[in-house]
Structure formats: structure tokens, C-alpha cells
Image (cartoon, rainbow, N blue to C red; front, side, top):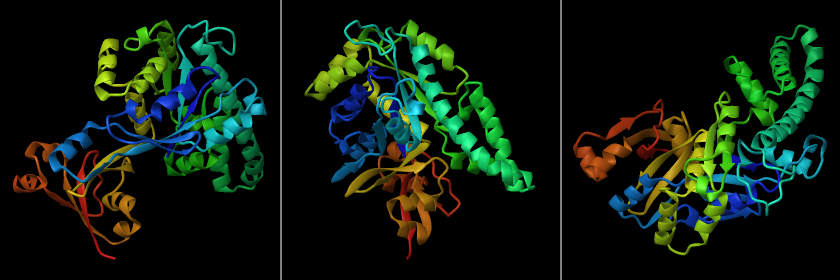
Amino acid sequence: MKAGIVGLPNVGKSTLFNCLSNAKAQSANFPFCTIEPNIGVVNVPDPRINKLEELVKPERVQMATVDIVDIAGLVKGASKGEGLGNQFLGNIRECNAIIHVLRCFDNDNIVHVDGNVNPIRDKETIDIELQLKDLETVEKRLEKVNRAAKTGNKEAQTEKALLDKIREALLQAKSARTITPQGNDEEVLMESFQLITAKPVLYVCNVDENSAVNGNSYVDQVRELVKDEDAEVIILSVGAEADITELESYEERQVFLEDMGLTEPGASVLIRAAYKLLKQQTYFTAGVKEVRAWTINIGSTAPQAAGVIHTDFEKGFIRAEVISYEDYVQYGSEAKAKEAGKFKVEGKEYIVKDGDVMHFRFNV
């Protein structure tokens, strides 16, 4: 699961990616790695794993991660291949969610591609290019499905009806995500279309350092514009975040944050939001060898969660032994939580909750 950072040139995308790619921005002692020049595996900051480490004292700790992709800056005409348009659109299609960075600061030394700062116009520029590309995709698919629908093919008629709804939305400059699939058939179809504007989106308002806590008038404009989109808006001073990553010690970074009026780096807030946007959650395994956060889709069953560790765990699943994170911390250890009756044995139908501390029993 990957979240792609998008935006116009010079809005702070690559600086933000570099901040995320520096482990110091997230925590005191966990590493980051780069798979490719523009893909980073970023640790998800989670104070719960620090608490489990403190209680269990394991040999090693492994945090949950999220993949962040730095995507080439988009310009007008990208849907027709202008600039790096084709590369941009190809990269974003491979992502599962979009982090849309908007410039919300004035600085005469940083040139704006359109001459002046206007996050509303910038958002619309990108939205239109993505909508045009999706419109092209939808119309090509309609050409194929129309013939089958006319013959009375029920599946084709269902697909045509959904494509018509999406096409109408796109023609009204609305994204595909504004169309809610009705029933499982439409959900499966919507997924198969692989539309760029169907992906969930998170807006990052890149502000000056003085606006990092409360935002500014540009941020207010963005919030007003996206209020009906069911999308989160995060305020981030990317320049200040870059300065934080340059500081050597955790203590120095905390002092810098306090001076800004922040309790943690904005990058940490963003990473957690991206994790949530991808509909991911965490369960833990906790033993003396390792305390580890495992990433699963929200709604995963116990066997599916076991399969994240190893496919054999899912195939041969017998049961899951579960202690909630809150109970584990309250009683201070697995043994004491068991004594207090907080140890549950769950079967194949159990839906894993965020923060569960788990052991799996299996037989292959």
C-alpha cells in the first residue's frame, strides 16, 4: 500500500519527502530506508510500541511502516502528456492514496509556476488534469461496454450504468470519489476501473513557520473549498520540518518544536494520517526476542492477521490469543493480564482490533 505525494512544481513536495525520509523527523532511534530514489518506507510513529518496549525489554523493536512516493510535479496539460505528465499519471495510478501538497505561504524567493500564490487555483489545476485523464479512461471503457449492454448482458448494463454516473460527475468537474458504489458488484467494478480521482485524498497545506500551529488565510480557503469532500486537511511548515531534521539530538528537536508551539513534528502527524487514509491499522506481537507492530487492513480477521507474519500461520490457523493493548499496559505484563482474566482465545471469525497484542497457534 502506497501513498503518493502530488502537487505543482515548487510547492514543497520533495522537501516534504526528504523530511519523511529522515528518521530523526519521526523518532529518536528507528531507521528509514529508500527502496528506489522516489519511494521511501517510513516508520509510523506510535507511542504504544515505545510503551511495550519499556515493559517487555525486547532484543529488538520493529515499527509499522507506510510507503510514501515522491511523484514528479504536475503542470497544466499533464493529461495530454505535457511536462512529465505521463510519468506523473503512471506513478499516481500505482498508488493507493493521494497526499496533495498545496502552497500556502508567501516567499518572493521561491517562484510559483503560475506567478502568484493561490492554493484554490492550484488544487483545481491538478483536479482538472486528473479528472480529464479519468474521463479518457471512462469513455474508452464505455465504448467497449456499450455494445455488450445493448445485447441485454446484465453485467454490462450494471457496468455501463456506473460508468455513466462517473462520466457525468467528471464532466461537472467532480472527482470519481464523489460517486458511492451501490452494493458489492459496483464496489468491485469501481476498483477495477483504477480511476485516479477515486483514490482517497489528504490535503497538506504547506505554510510558513509562524503559521504552523493555527494556519493562515490560505489554509482557511482550502478548508472551505474541501469541506464537502470528506478529506482531512493538515497544516505543515515543510521548511521548519526540514530544519528540525538537521538537528542532531532528540532533545534539540524537542526544544525547536516547543518554540514553535508544537508537541511533535508535523511529519509524524502526516505519516499517521497517511496510514489511516490507506485504511490500515496495527496489531502487536510482544516477546523478549522482539516487540513488533504489524500492519493489516481495517476489518481483517485473525487468520488474515496471522498471514501477515507468514502464509503458513493463516493456512494452519487454530486460534488467536489476544490481550488488548490497554489491558496489557494496565497490568504491566502478559502473565499479569492473564491472571486478571484479560486473556482471550479467539477463533477464525474474530475481527482484529487496533492495538491488540496477539499470539497465534497454528498447525501445518
